[in-house]
Length: 326
Image 1 (cartoon, helix red, strand yellow):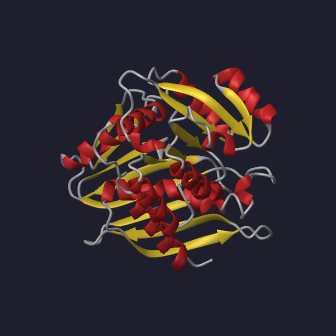
Image 2 (cartoon, rainbow, N blue to C red; image 1 turned 120 degrees about the horizontal axis):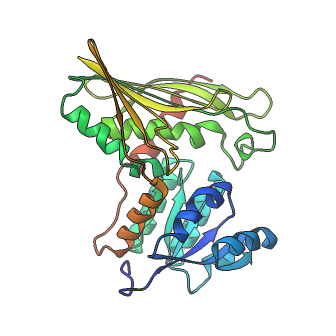
């Protein structure tokens, strides 16, 4: 079921005409020789046509058309996050691989159900935390493993953005879910990626919008089993910032633009020790293209696919939300 006919391109249907699809993911798809965009659906056929005029494929009004399309092998879902689980389940049940924007659902239970459904149908379910596929993080991990800053003592990360316009979906609880699920998931996933899947929540504080009943910012303290802390900040009422840093027994490593570097951006990694300061300029990388590579590789692989960290992330998000002061 998972493997495709040798030499045939992976035929994608796009379920929703979101900004991230227009700016980042669909341009990456059109340059990938293994991918063919065959259909794009929106609630408004005119918007779907705007997308197909640029990226190709047939426009459709209504998402059911993608689910039922016989010539679609895989579906990309960039819908508002509270719609992810429903449509991912519909696509998996129809026998299609799914690449879904993060988070794949709003709860660990929903994510577990989706993973089980994908496993039962021998399909690829891929949650698109695209930053994980950028090569800069492998460089950071190697420096830490090589003892560049001594023994690891702590991790910190922040992802904050300025306020959005009043009609932004992040202010709409029923579809957008607030800033925690949409923005806070990045530093949480970075902590899991570098510190391991056994993180526990030591504390959390959420700030809610006074009128809209959604979380708009917060701080989180996580810990590894041996007491290494991870201090995380997220929000959408700040200046723009996305970064992480590691403190060690002999120094510090920090990286800006950790989550959203453009494909032309050459990351600058800063290493500081007591008597030494160094900047390493890394090569540019296209994390959306790399995420597509990983998805296509998983579809073509005969081995069963389960994405590392997906359910651990969902469980940790549930735990943070449960204990947060707000």
